[in-house]
Image (cartoon, rainbow, N blue to C red; front, side):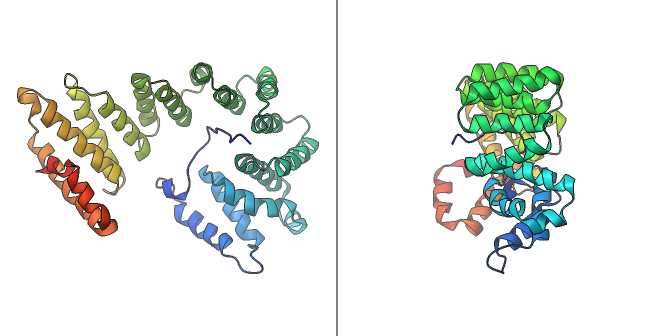
Length: 328
């Protein structure tokens, strides 16, 4: 089955640094995964796990499908759950099943939802997603356009139309669709991030950088957006545009502030930028400021210490790259 290209929140627990419920989700998932009683987690634990995933927009399709499907099929769970939560869980589990390619189980849930909510646009979008997963993009597109005819502001249908274009390999059309969506929903950071990804696949680095800048403006407390924007600035920098590398240093520094100095990626990026300034600059532009020199030295020490503590086998490789010399 074709894996769905979702625009909703992505990633697993390891990427949830900005979510206050990270520890709660990790603990609940651990209890579900290591449950006794024949390996079946208690209904309340599964319910809490699914709720935390919904609230945090976290995608863990394998775990959601495995634990959630048992809940959907359980008569006891149906008695314990209120009607609203029951159907929310059905929808959530169905998307997870589509992600994992379990078409038969997903079809069963879609039919149940369609029977319960025959006029629901959300169910129509779910039916379209099922068509996508089966590779029937024409039918999926027809479904989404039908939803948009009734409600032109339906975000889910717009996003799935973009996914249809991506599934067909038509990235230019996907870009066009997503730009039309963002003309209306201009504060959707995840859509800007997806548009950046599409631009990168088309080797349109400047446009991607613009999109990441929009992400930073919309969610300034999200370190991943600062990191991606810094990467794009560094990639765009040349000997004649080293001011971009200096801008990137600023954004890598913000990432270190937001992550309490734990981002190895940001340390690498910062040292690469400062090395580029020193090696590619001409005259005074190649000289680092006193603050930049201190920052480089600090990052070099911390990066070496990180490898010494967590991955000593690769320490020699790190030193061989010469990146640590940026801090001397």
